[in-house]
Length: 601
Ligand SMILES: Cc1cc2nc3c(=O)[nH]c(=O)nc-3n(C[C@H](O)[C@H](O)[C@H](O)COP(=O)(O)OP(=O)(O)OC[C@H]3O[C@@H](n4cnc5c(N)ncnc54)[C@H](O)[C@@H]3O)c2cc1C
Image (tube, rainbow, N blue to C red; front, side, top):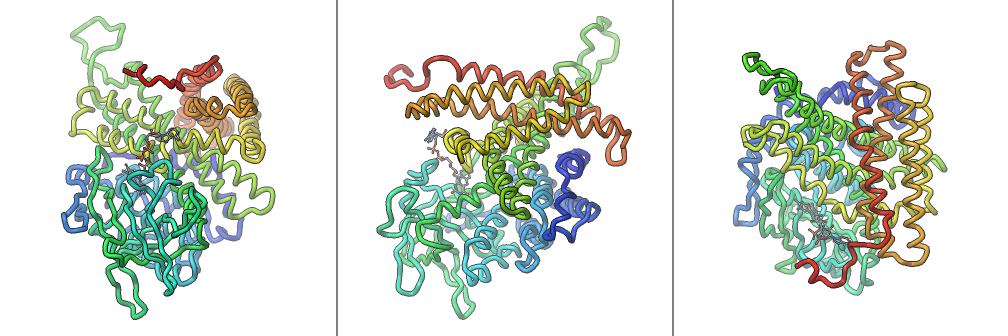
């Protein structure tokens, strides 16, 4: 069985770096201990290895496709996978016992999903989407809605989806036009088109629960007039029967990656008989949906890191087996060739991948820990975790998807020409990963969110809290002579980003919002390097502690040395890019606000 992730790394992150056991002291998670938690992760590994990974290539080669009759054909194994994942609580396991879940912390639930994402990321999309949509209904739906839909989604019989995008409204959801008219029977009738809807009406589930954004007739323009509806494909009637609800699947987009994962065009209300059930209050739909989208953004970030990890593992295995060329100093052609992993440039490519994938996974776990803490803490503590999560969410989504793509490209490069062929999985990883910087808000939109909203929220409180967290790690690292220079380097980067922010805030202060935001994506890149530098220093501190105490109970000496080495690599080869980003932003005058578009000719 090919290796698609590192269990050693997962255990290190889960127990040593992000200390999942601290959560078990809270009542909600008190039913768990470390041994049980790890057994749950091991069971996810088995599921990933036995049911998902074997179909990774086949689902790419026989993509989901439109059947011409309102449905989508999927790989025959998909139904079985969804069923098994549901039986093992990988759709509803995060929910509380009384809601039919296992009351798992997000840290554990998401680590299980990481294994699925690394094994077969398209297939994980179906279960992840269902988990997220059920969560949204649990939080904002009525008792009847919860009882009608959530158990069916948790059982894997029904698929949950999120239906936001329309042909004319992608990044700008304020422009959606799908309309909802109230009826005197309590439901609404809906009309409109939604495109790019993942997990839409495929053959592996019996029914579909589309969490749909629409505008109630007469609602105010913009985001303040958007409401959230449950729209099933087959609506449950009081007598228990299911009636077709006039939600027609008009097509399935064919894609460069994630080809086993249906991406549908849905048409609501062609026959004026599409019933929709309002969730929560009218006009608050986007606020509710943001809860699911925030979770989904962290999950997309983690998914990107997981695919980058799988590509790294595949290229590492290849580099360990492929003989080619001789060491630079070896002039004797009769000597046998060396393995490519012995060439410094191949090591550079492997370390870059390891630094990106493991660093991004660590940030994903940091976010999941913060998410759990927001649910078990109160007052100021809760608010602190919430703000930290708010600022880190666009960063994890963007760093992992943008740098993950670079990382997967390096996996191809590591294999040479073979990497470009379909005989090896790395080209599929590369193709699958590209979507992650597009859906759930493109990189451009995430960057506007980071600089335009998150950096300024509560007078910069989220940023201050993040800086304080990073400073704490810097202080812990400064105790170890080997780490101390890196602690200083990261502190210097913190000063640098503060200089950049001060420069940008001057534009904002003068009301020059275009200037303030025009380099938001470069700012995002800068923030990404610093935050991942923090995650690497954090890992290195734990590794240094383990080495100092000779505590090799969980991992080996070379594992910990590898962590510290990769941290050094990240600081020398990656964090140094931060200065270039800062210089780009600090230069006078914008080059990207040109009004004479002929310049592009
Ligand atoms: C495979 C796939 C699965 C998807 N799954 C779902 C799903 O399940 N549910 C769902 O609702 N949607 C889904 N989507 C839609 C996805 O979220 C959108 O494609 C995405 O939000 C971008 O919208 P768009 O494609 O219309 O691009 P546009 O919004 O037209 O953007 C085009 C470019 O312009 C940039 N841009 C746009 N506005 C701005 C701005 N104000 N400032 C700076 N730059 C800007 C963007 O960053 C991008 O680079 C999916 C899409 C794909 C391809």
